[in-house]
Length: 162
Image: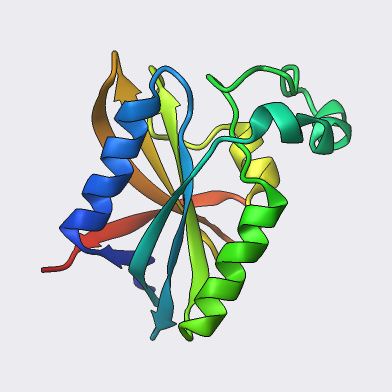
């Protein structure tokens, strides 16, 4: 079986990296609009969003309390959330363009670009999750992940298209 792949233009990747660096030491987040053909996701548009963790954290408390994950109020430096109204707005925009939301990106300030248990807990099947490691304010690594049938993250190939 082929490894999952997400294709994006260099300018899409640069938008993600720049966003991650610009909000350091906080986590950035955003959405990726595109399409899926033959199992390959292709990004058409990257939409940076505000990190709404401080206003949305209460929506996650119940699930986090069922796990061994640290406090849900860990702060913008260790958690991210996209406001539901932004998700709906981008879903409408995608539909109007005959596209879909195909993924979410976020950063890990001073941590590797590897999904955390909290990332896994809230991940949705079918989406790509691009994670940028930002070390001392500089984006140092970018990796993409998707969930398998057991709700575990598996790496995806990031294919920069020209």
